[in-house]
Image 1 (cartoon, rainbow, N blue to C red):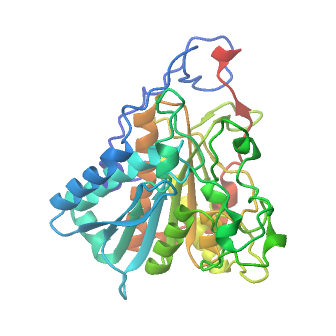
Image 2: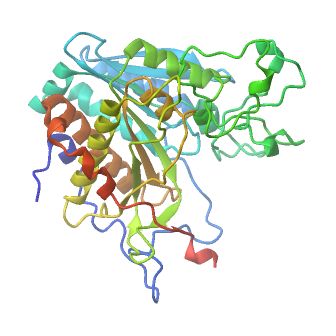
Length: 399
């Protein structure tokens, strides 16, 4: 077995029983769950609330003895603070890394992952951590979509959702009032009784200074394979942070539903990864060196998680092929950052501990390899050996 690295070790990988198979004839997946029970209420009390995030970050910073600094880098569309945690500042000889989570408000586990990772980086005296901090500048956006993370139903119950909370205001950009909204504001949310909001992760543009202006009406509503428009303050805040740091590596954490590995292998997928989300545009071509670094990071994590013996981390596949320059990953790759997408299985409160540990191991080994230079020895061509995404499956208890 491959030697477990320090940050993989602190993740606490004794989770082999977390996904014990359920008793079911010819299960659709191995293991077959866990799944929510019929009529089970999805509880989010174990997750960090918006009101708790700032104090948690402040506590970690206070214990870090100067390693970590925290600032409010911007505000959400409804006024929530968007926090930035910084381990170091940009300087020659240190490789800059940006890790962002919860751009979709209903995909919360990345925030819990980075809180644990920041705690280790802030307080550990282990030589590996010191090496990482000596050789890398690491910045975290621990929750970009504060609106979606605090979205509540009509009774006030926390449900969270993908979008932020924001209206389409064409006059703000000097556009004709009849100009259609960007395509990533779902038209269903414009109906009476619904709350308008954007998918922030389609609002990016490889020109990080792009802003709509009078005469741009013909650009709207746009399409998924084209850049976005930076109409959300959240996307603009993320881009401003990217411009400050100019990272060489960008990691973005998400959730998705449930899949099996393939039509012939029903291993349950706990994680999908991707290192290529756009081939570039005529004005912003994708640098082959950036693509190679992205591939090497993804292969590194794939190898590490599969090497951990009797763990639930075997079902790792490659996210479906996409062309999305309007995502944070796409726009940042076209600005020189090697990328990795984490799409962890989402099953409400089920298996949260295991899924958090899975991403924590991946991010930890990535930081170690970037700091030590071991990333240079990874064969990026093996990226295509990562199995492609398999079929989606649903909760068998809903059948």
